[in-house]
Image 1 (cartoon, rainbow, N blue to C red):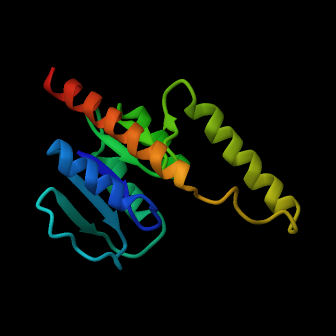
Image 2 (spheres, one colour):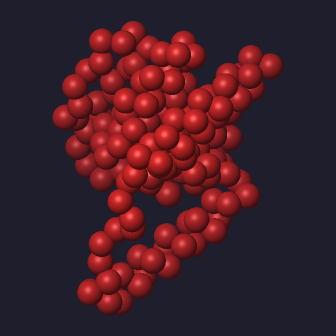
Length: 151
């Protein structure tokens, strides 16, 4: 299964394309507001409003043989610990080898932002290159997860 933290995911179309090409199901989890897909491989899961409800839904279900797409670092850490393969929308893989550093950096940046109210804003803009890299990495990652699940 491809689990998607879908509320703010910029690569939903790319995920659906890979799922269709590989015949692999995907579950888009959100608090609502997403249009249902006519694609039989795409399941829309609407969870209750509230902080981290979609994240909890994914974290409770994702595991070995699954791929999770999220920009939420605490969710990514839980999914990596459960054995899932985790990708950020820019194609960066979050693994047991790097999730600790990514989590620490996230916490450090949150502390810096809270200490300096003028240090706000996100990182760089999402680019065509990010989208292309994500598509390539997702394809390879889903294929590897399918081999893992079948092997």
